Amino acid sequence: MRLDQPLQTLLTMSSSPSFEDLASWDDLNIILPDVSLEDPDDPRRLDPRKLPAEIVQLDQSIADLEDKLSALKLRRANLLDRRALITRLPPELLSRIFELGVHETGDLLFTLSLVSRHWRNLVLATPTLWTYIILDNDWSWRIPSFLRRLRAYLDRSQASKLFVDIDFRYVDSTHDTETIMSQLAPHLWRCYSFNVSVPDWFRMRKVQEHASCLGPALEDLYLRVDSSDSEYQDPFTVLSQPCPRLGYVMLEHAPLDCLGVPMPSLRQLYLLRDARCHSSARIAYPFKELMTILTASPIKWFSLRLALFTIDTTEDVFRATPTPQELPHLKGLSFDIVDPGSISLFLESTSLPALELLSVNAGEELQWLTQMSLTPSRFPALRLLDLRNCSFTGPALVPLVRALHQLPQITGLGISTPAAGLIGTRIFDMLAAGPDTIGEWLLPRLEAISVQNCGDISGHELLRVVSARRGAAAPQVANIAFLKITQCYSLDPEVLDRLTSLVETVRTL
Image (cartoon, rainbow, N blue to C red):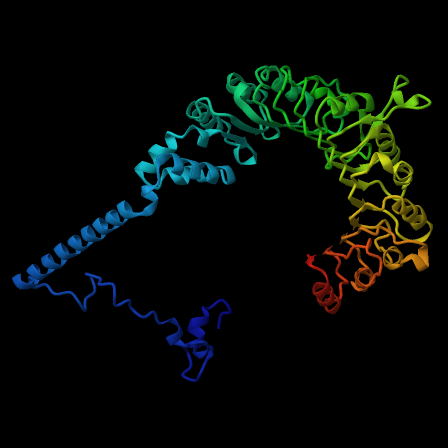
């Protein structure tokens, strides 16, 4: 017997049970026929005889009734559409609703165009729906399609203000960059929001060459240079016209030289380094130039990230008694991974009568806070202090507590990501201790405590602070009315329930 003989032949040579009998559950493979489907070739239904006239007549009546039923359903749907309340809305109100929807989701515009002829005509007749010009990674391989879309938007938006968000990092060709900017250039006079990201200064130069009309209507500006060595290039002024309405500016990895025009309405300024850069060096901003911008505008919020200040010998700060420059409108100030010396320089060189929020991430060095506590009269409105990456244990707690004693007006304290990963209990013991322990209440007006990413927070330390202040006999000591606890995974659920019953607002994540 040959070994290569088919197995089926070997199995059928014996009448006794064999492997063939295994896994022979035929009922598992049975497919029941679908009685709802009538196969004309099914022999069980095949009848070569001609159908009787009565059946033919019945089939025709059924077909006629089905057509009539479809027509009645369509008529009913049309009547309901005409009766719909949304059809009674005036076109200007419906257009405004469309504007709000498209403002939230740009892709909604094409869906609106497909609802009905009336809606499509209304969409085409509403210029403000065609003002959002966005190029992101979805268009990186469809630049010709984007150009067609760009022309249609510019034409249909008529004279409405434009929102332009172009990410040239997804445009490989310099020619395409030139084409896009040349199409936009005649319309930039009506651009109110201009957001541009480029891979290098060469591309930014192409943007600048076609942005001469930008400025009169500009309200928001965002410039990003996606290059780790952008600060070593020769920057230039991107804006060439005064921007009387410009109120928001964010420069990411771009120097102050990009501005260089009057901005009398500037209220928010954000300067930050591209966090994705591998270099640990911080981008440098000339201190004198920065102060010139801040003092020339009603700035309300200033944020600096991954940066430091550079100074020269002509700076006023080198005088024996420099005069602080007042920023009367500044309410919010944020330093994130900024050199402590730069923070001290800014606080010593300014007077901030309206400052309400100070957020600082500068490591364990608290010289800026100590210096600030020596002149509390320059910060009379300060209410919220947000500390990140500080040390709350050991000797580092001493200068912190001493500084807080000089800032009794603070009503909210935020603590995020302590330097050692653990916050300890000492700072909360100080907040819960009264005059018998430390001579006076620390932050007597404190009403809010927020902790984030503190691995040892169980809630008991917060409960001690809340209970101590609720039971304080001194009328000047405020109760804790707000707690926010996020990313603190050691939080005791039972203590959280207790805190919820005592504190008006408790938020956890």
